[in-house]
Image (cartoon, rainbow, N blue to C red; front, side, top):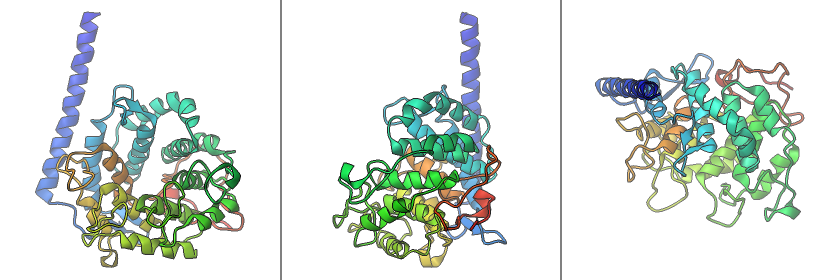
Length: 372
């Protein structure tokens, strides 16, 4: 038994050493080739579809090489509690799947994370609607369409009489609500018209949405607003007046450097998470996040990457940050939510998310076509 444990420990040490070597090689490559060009983080193919540029690919490879070193022995990724956490692992699955779709080798890390989630599914889904939607989106990104649908199929809107919100929403706030809309749309399930209407009554005067649905002036934030924009885009509402107002709000929290802050402030303090979500929102609306008109938001996101390959949360908090890295990876790959990478299980054709509204997606992540 002692001998077997020694062999296991030696194998684990060798695996960890190999991962560290990969990180070192990629970091050296980044140093030799220079940082990601600020105007080249995301480019477009001949169909106008956003794709990761070669420079962004090097950034993604370094980020993934660092990320896999953070995976626990049980396949999960450690959350705020200090132990493997299904929420953090769901975000990791989405990030790994997005990087893989962009052409980055993720090894066995994705399957190990999925195995961990399978064991946590029932408990995590029962924790709340937002958790269920996040897990559904993770399975969707990994190509597990059947699992994704099973989780969100049948989720019910909560009426205004049962919540302080002024509209019928999924979960306890607009962040949950948008996650469910994204999961339903990505899984090919119907999004009720009432769910879209709820966004009209919860949008603040400045064009933002708040995490908890509050319409009090100043309550809105860039993260919730960017998530809602992606939900509106995938349900065919990219031309809705709500979108123009929300984009005005995002511009109000964009610093001169191109990064996005959580809320308006003086001075603005951009962070990697807010910038990544804003980049995904821009891509979902067919806007080029590398354009000068948008202050090269994609390049601003790339600038948050540390030499290790991980992303930092803010320049004032320069340490490697797992949560910032998880958020940045899909955005660097040019993939908004829902990340749908093709080759999905399940043969049922995707229906229009909202009756009479065509699906609005990017072919690079969906391999689908709009339907009437």
